[in-house]
Amino acid sequence: MSHHHAHRHAPKIEPPSHATDFDLIIVGGGLTGSALAVSLADTSLRIALVDARAPTRPQGWPTQWDNRVYAISPGSADLLAHIGCWPHLTPDRLQRVEQMMVSGDAGGVINFSAFDIGTEELAWIVESSEMACELWTSVSRQRNVTCFCPAEPRSLQVNTDQALLSLTSGQTLRGKLIVGADGRDSWVRAQMGLSSQHDPYNELGVVANFRTELPHFGTAYQWFRADGVLAYLPLAGGATQDQGKMISMVWSAPEAFANELLNLSAEDLAYRVANAGENKLGRLALMAHAVGFPLKLVRVPQVVSPRVALIGDAAHGIHPLTGHGVNLGFQDVRVLADVIRTARAVDDLGDVRLLSRYQRARREEVVVLQSMTDAMRKLFASKAPGLSPLRNLGLSLTDKLTPIKSMLIRYALER
Image (tube, rainbow, N blue to C red; front, side):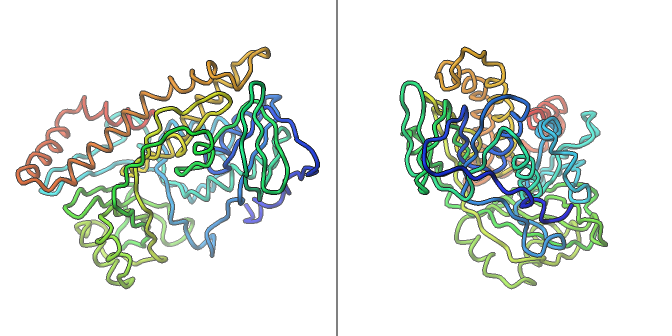
């Protein structure tokens, strides 16, 4: 695959003079926005996709790796396969997670293995840009999609029979349904006055990729520590000598400590990260600068209103404890695409009764997963004396209660 492939097909440019009519206008062309457009490729719907910029590969690609990676559940991989994206991902940039070791802060360990529950993998570790560029390529070839990119939305007006989205370029797009796929600080959500509770954790996720001395054998590690949650996610390492000897590290830590980590030299950071991870993979070598992402939970009680539906992080920011946020987004896509696809010709796609089917179908899982990750985070972040042995007892017990454990895994996987 040439790395120009994301730009080979110039988006169709519309004349700026008049309003342009669409059935569906998607604001935000990230992973969920573009996946929704591709999911509807075989329909006769006229779709507009509006985004500020097309996705790009990391600088120095393919030898450099993206510092944003995701743990893609088998359910999400199925969706991406179903819409034709998965087979085009570069095979030597995909890493199977075959087991996961979760350790408490005083010796409790849970070991999840794909073999135990009869699946081939617990998840796939994939770079964000690998998926984003592939989805974007599909969108730009799609006959029923018009891309407005680069474009910025200026105002949104919802009427009884249509929604009007005006862009800063002066163009106005008319549509039956507006989908906000524009991230945690969603512009669409704010315009519609859909409330959101932001619960900042006052933590940063410190993210960096390392070469490892020892091979990871497809194992992901997670340590709940007094100074935060440290995770090693196995990376494929490409078709190089690094194969099986590369990880993506995420350390979710209180701001002050996270900033301390970000200010360390490459050698010191590698040493700290190896040490905190019990030197499981031997010596580490940093591949590119570490980056810090602020962590917060965003709860959005209403994800639909007349003519508007929110998907992905616009609908639910989640603590990236498990790298699962994007899987929730892909399931939003699956359900909303189903609702749109099964609507009859006489139905109005923007009808809130139709859209509330999507909201109902998604609510339970989002709430369960948010409260599960939130509860785990709170439990491990708590400094109360006496809680530590309790937490670790909980971890070790869970490891012995195989049915509960496989339920937890299945839950995480099928979503």
